Length: 168
Length: 392
Image (cartoon, rainbow over all chains, first blue to last red; front, side):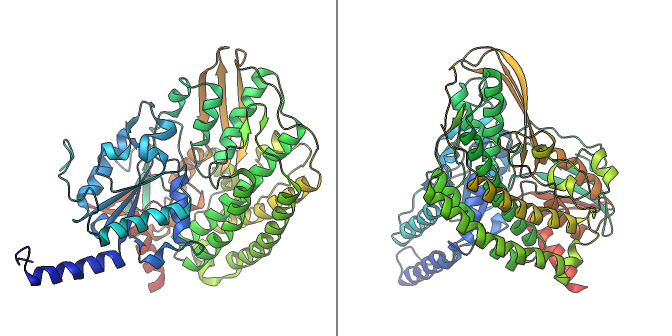
């Protein structure tokens, strides 16, 4: 852990870490105000027809065990705080996948009074999956894109500092 | 929020189903639950207010997104109400297609529920099987409408697509496979001993209680309440294709499993009947852009129960007020009462028994054991329930 950035020991350690991270990313799913369309498609992605688990992705209950946060829906005023709390509880490095049109732009709900906005206005997002809702294939593609970018070590939006006004 | 306090639902009427982040509080004495409260509103988006800023056509898309599971019934309720205000009626073929979609949607929703409820009971195999078979009906919905979830079938005054010969054969083939599978599931939920131990006599709700708490849909019908909007006030093509009421007097979780599974058979029968007697004709009728001023209510039977719309138009392009009451909201009252006196380990099954919008891992459960209180996530409670029964 305390090796210098360029040392052979550190490089070897990084390699092992990346290998583990790419082969078994654990995901947590949070619905920040979605219509469930995306949520059931995420569930469908985990069931036998699509089977996301073959990429090692496991849906995990606790944010403390998760590497990837899959968020669906626009962020409502009430769930904003909870979303930030979940994001804060996740260990570094963490990645966020915004799933569905609402998560990308607010979608059909843009302009409604209880909507804070899209997910990227609250937490940094690494991968956007469009669609209302995205097909399971699209969700798989999105996750694979994230894993690919991890392989190339250029995943965007990692380890950003906590947002202003977030609960401790 | 104190668990002992009176039941308050502080949300707007949009209470979308599955995976919504609700918050429950149970107070327990040892293992027995003595009080339950539910905190909703995390997914309140302000759709009703938003509807006032959008025109009727835009609102069809907005209201379809109240709930991703029963999206079609929401759009249908709005379209039926708007058509009544405008004094037009969709052509018979359009009505039949709407009914067809409603029933296909019911199949998808009940299959989904069967899987989720089994998952909450720790019966992962049934979860995976029922979701695998659900893909058959998802394929049918997709080939008909072009989308797996928000189908966008309705226009005000008709539907967007026709059911061709090819669809006809495809649906019949799919339904046949599903019917075989459903027979198997009915056998599993009524004969599997481990599963029966989790469902028989659990979450008992009597007929009087069901009526008192205003339960709707399959939850009420499993307690023997003969209530189904498709029968009481037929809409769409239901007058031509009558539905047989499915009820059960059990009142427990087992009865809810039986009612929903038997409703699947009823849906298969209806779909066959509709396909074989599809009325010919137009798909749409002309509707004025401005819906005449007036008020109306519109009721449809969603997979979870009665869906109620109040619609007020002021004669402009936009509605003045739309009020929605969703079935899940009606059933919450029953679940918080039924939960009392049951084991904590039974809570996941009881909650999923009403088919709420469910299985969200991040909903929190606060357990007050005497003085100490402990916060559990949904996942932990589910695991606790499974472990508890495994040890016995």
